[in-house]
Image (cartoon, rainbow, N blue to C red):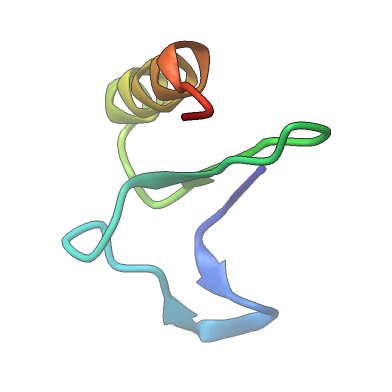
Length: 60
């Protein structure tokens, strides 16, 4: 999932200084969110980074 604004408010862009991506881990349906305001290269890096977190996560 990716987006660059808060909900549907085009006057509230998501700031890349606050976050670039995050992972919500769930056994059934994990979610990776990418900040669409970031550059193309940064979005790819963030996707790979968060996906790696998903792959190496353990349920201790």
